[in-house]
Amino acid sequence: MIYVMSDIHGCYQTYLKMLEKIGLRESDTLYILGDVIDRGKDGIKVLMDMMMRPNVIPLLGNHEYMAAISLASLADAAKAPETPPSPALKRRLAKWVSDSGAVTIDAYRRLTSAERAQVLEYLAEFSLYEEVRAGGKDYLLMHAAPDEGGWEPSAYHPEDFLFSHSLPEENPFPGKILVTGHTPTFLIGEQYRGKIVTSVKGDHICMDAGAGYGENLAAVCLNTGWQYYLSTAEDPALQD
Image (cartoon, rainbow, N blue to C red; front, side, top):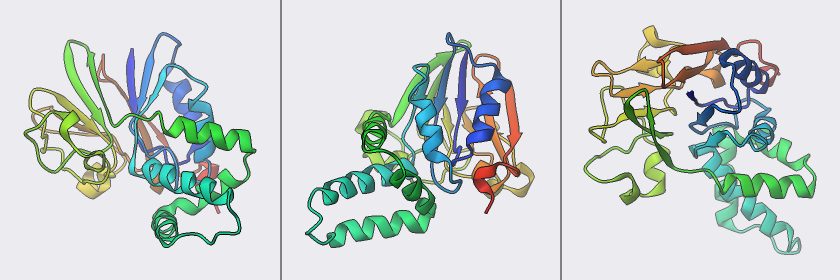
């Protein structure tokens, strides 16, 4: 079976419960559409678990993108402590922190040097998109859809897959069923709070059910269409 999850945002305990709920087996594949980290404070724990599972395929989200750039720059800066941080590094860190990255930075600093290296290497492996066939249908998985269509996925700039907020009825890749995260579904409409949203035509599935905001972590099986939900309201990662 092929499963999809997105926007875990550090909710480690709920993530583990979801793996149990869907009954993930070694023969299954789970795609995670980015934004594993930030908001909730246990994103590094989720990453460390994911990297031990060869059947979990990570895709890059905007939060991992900011983390990979910032943490790599911090690692370089640590090699020359006598040199003050560059203005560019300060800007990157400020942007990431303003987008809830401080909890991830704190957790990263508590890792050993070997674990930090593992995290950076793992983040570098995240893909921008994946093409999948399941249940006789062709799917295109990514964190966020580009604003404009007309090209093959490989022709886009990486940031085109990370920051755009597309609506369910928008699919720039005709002929494929698009599966995205990034935009919490309560922003699409209050009636969709905590739910997966599928377009009327069935060609775009929006997966971010608001786990990072105390709503639901969602998963879907592409072979069957079954949807799974767990509330993150009580997840320790979101508690003060």
